[in-house]
Length: 389
Ligand code: TGC
Ligand code: FAD
Image (cartoon, rainbow, N blue to C red):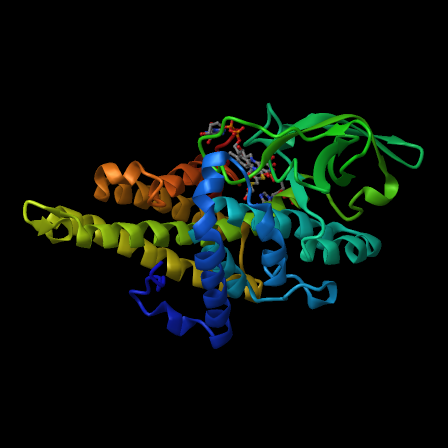
């Protein structure tokens, strides 16, 4: 396979430190050598490549922006973003796995957990010895998680959990689920361990998107959760939404990886495919499509670096993350579709990564807040009018 050099039309590398470039390049190499050769087979078979988990952990990619105290790499947020960008060049399912483990399981334990919970879970999750999932969405409450009906009732020594979650990434694989449920009407976070009586996590089948990722239901029937497994520092729905900011941040970076994969495929194809005695790259309409891709990739790269620097400085607001997630997902999906056009009929084959990225991006544009929800979140921020209820 030819070496992947990425695209850097505006020399955005000059905005990165040597360490950030080194980290990006080592993940890029890992993806070229270990992910791309196997991913189509997993996608076709609808399986997640679990054998990559120890390698991902060994590279320090799980909870990579969390403290070294727990065994994590303690990267800054730009380096963390670059990791996710490179992983998603391989497949959104691989980035999703890492996003969920890092942003939606390790982050809430780190932020809302007790010292005992942090000391026990974070090192195991960082080493990939335990896998986690995040249960917020329910069959009847997707964009509006505040309406959730999953309920916790106080009992001696703990809580009784009843309800169901749906569309949960890593659910069936997970040793521990971060579950959001209402206790006396207020949303709280709980750690529900695999094997707990009354708790099941059947895998959902029939996906045309994110096929190399496990998506599950979580079902709770009188599940007893001991007091030590409640996240003590959560305060209402806002705590769950804080976790979403971390994951949305990772998605804003990740989808640039999909854009790069699609652009690279389309450019190479356009230069080598001859019609009417010319490479199709020599036709103006093809050039317009390639220029569109380069423009949107460049804008997203610059947006992400500023987003990351703001996150590191502590000046990032959740509405900034919404803007980046919304824009980058939409542009990534547009780029995937345009790349498919350039490849003509070949674009639908799994010999090329384009259709897989395109199908994946339908989920990525939907999860972690749909395009419409992010429009309304930003709309409220700039007008002061809340328009989603
Ligand atoms: P609302 O009244 O607006 O807000 C309640 C409180 O929370 C504050 N807030 C946030 N805080 C931090 N981060 C955010 N993103 C926040 N958004 C809101 C807000 O200021 C308020 O604070 P306070 O102090 O005034 O109490 O709440 P609402 O119930 O009206 O809902 C707001 C809405 C619709 C924006 C929110 O529910 C939402 O974002 N909905 C989208 C749902 C979503 O994104 N679900 C994602 C599920 S997880 C997932 O998809 C994982 S995919 C993983 C993978 O595989 O990669
Ligand atoms: P709905 O909320 O029913 O929305 C349907 C449509 O209506 C959308 O277009 C939406 O934008 C629009 N809509 C809704 N309300 C409004 C409004 N007020 N104004 C305008 N339009 C509106 N969730 C988790 O908790 N954990 C996970 O790990 C997880 N992983 C996922 C993995 C995959 C592959 C997928 C596809 C989803 C995953 N999700 C997960 C769920 C995801 O977060 C939800 O699908 C998402 O939040 C949207 O909810 P919904 O699908 O129920 O759509």
